[in-house]
Length: 80
Image 1 (tube, rainbow, N blue to C red):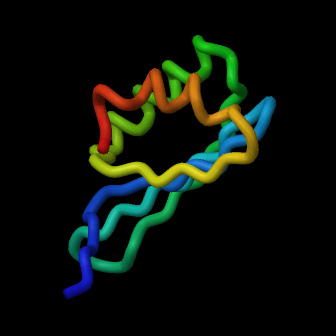
Image 2: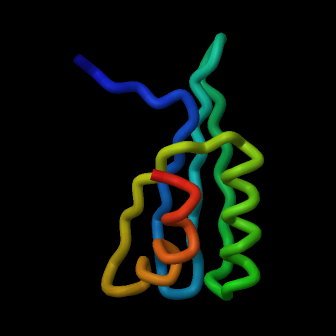
């Protein structure tokens, strides 16, 4: 069985930026939107709100080193 999430995001985490890709699979063709966010707390909160506004429920994160930790801490209560 293949699990397909209707609204999900992938995050590519770097020291100074987070690149977020949202995929929405409802109805017709898959919609894809990509945005880049700085890693300051205020910008990560904007990322959080952007993901919520798109109805994202699951997130996969790729990171080098420890840069994922503050992002995980801000997002863990709202997303799987």
